[in-house]
Image (cartoon, rainbow, N blue to C red; front, side):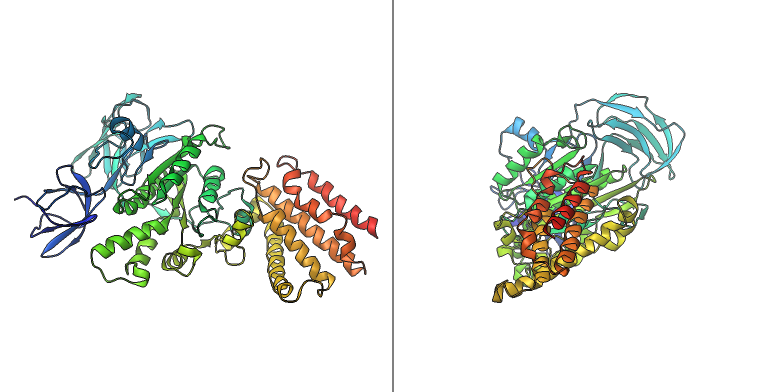
Length: 582
């Protein structure tokens, strides 16, 4: 008996009086075989969300089950590709069917006709288990793809091919499992997008993700395998910040998910990423990047899938021993998709119409981040950085508040800072990082024990400046004594000379940790020297007239990243300037 559509409500369809489907099963809907997923089953009806446009579907169209979960194909050819939310390759669709994705477009995510140079590392007769590496492929100039035994497969290799060129569906090995079943291993494996890939052990988050951005590396650091949220209103620079992190962070691989963003913004992202040069390899950044584009005019249900597709691909490369950074822009659009589908299902709404299960869905996503020991004893990590777009820059709305519960790093972007052209527009008063204690031993060992001490003093001076500025706004700055005026001046030096960073300046777009330390050191040296100058009964105004404060601000441009010895010259100049006044 055929299962047919009983009702259609946007991306949600219902099938009545059937027991043929299971929860989260992938199905094909209608004559065009649109991909869908079972999301609710009762004794009366089965509810399915369709990941493509349901325009043209009608009551009575057939629904076909697959007896499998919504999955992605994982294998060589993922990197450098651009997929939509359900892993359909956009370039191949454009060349085959035009620039618009037709409903039911069934294009293989990976090129089945391409031959890959495969180097075999497994041996016949060897006992293997899930995660063990059987072969390697130079997928791009930057990434070696490792062909692994699928998770939960365990047994003995009964046959394995020799080095050579193979298609992704060619059998390269056969494994006789412990229950006697023979498994054929190809270059590709499938994995359900909503099921985390298994690991051997969770590892402590004790290594920072180095980004070259001072406000992050120094003030609010993020650990490799950690999770961070970047909330900000329209125009505060969320996308630009994620571009900088994607380009400069020391992750081996970048997965960028454009979830529900405007089409023109996504087009800009795709064009810029393909034009960017990787500063680590001096080749195209796409050599280690996967792009997933799901624009706001694409079917709403696919937004949810795009997030899970991205994190599953990230976990796959993590299993090879890579450190992967996942950028999700933006999780608010994903949450809005959940709200729309929940409304069509007539579920009881919670705050602002979002479904009651919003917190658990956000948690499931961010908790797939982590630094792990893989099944094959390699170490890898998935770091998740999710942009949040609260309406009207209201951080009290549900998506932002629930995201804060599940991330340990919160980089709040401030529209006032953005309007002042202060980028990155991270508000240092409400942002925070809970990774600092975990990362302290790494900073002490690899940079300097002074790094965290200087950072603490910088943070204290910024807090003091904020308190004093409240007084200045009320009664003016003339009533303040010189020592408090000095705090305000040093606060300006820290804000403009250290926290503000120019992504378009060759010396300031990326700053190594050693230079970040020396910049803090010079700023604090200026503060200590000026404090002694004031305590010696000298007026601060005399020191301000020399322009030495502005010169310290300009050090980020004037002193090149590979000429750090000039910081000593700047300190000497500060000393001589003060002595010349005395």
